[in-house]
Image (cartoon, rainbow, N blue to C red):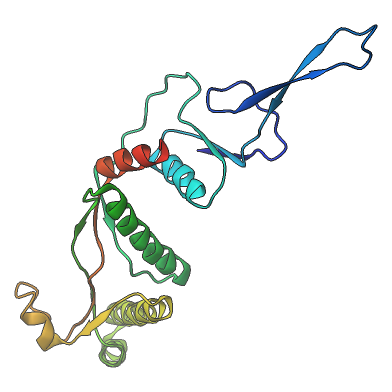
Length: 223
């Protein structure tokens, strides 16, 4: 993917570049008439044939930018293999990634409305771990038992702390997240057998159909 700002770029002739001609003569008696080709430069040029390229070209055009999207330059390059299905998980320990994931979910919903194509198979994501108080008690007991148990107890405590940070990041990013106690986990997930665990349930995730997404973005960027 290559993006170039073309505010002051003189473009070569391209079928998508609007041109106009103007006659210029510096001296009507001595100098011959010269044709000057004026080209109206675009705001951005996007090169690439990936889903990201198409999404950027489409998004910029929606923001009233003049965009030229060139899928390729006549070069035949083997496209890298990509996964047909990609998980789309909103919760993350990093606040910025959590916000970006939430924004991408809204963006995908907008694409589905524009194209009337199902791009995501909706499903929830579930994070499991011990409550922080229980993990602290487990770490204390393990430290008394010996070195190997102490290492295990420290890992359990770190996992519980990560779960708490995940919940805080989702709260600050305004990502929906439900907290489920052990008893509440048994009914929807009977196969888990969550002994002393708690769960963080996020209902807005899913699995992206990457091939359909690519077709939809290419169609939108070509409009």
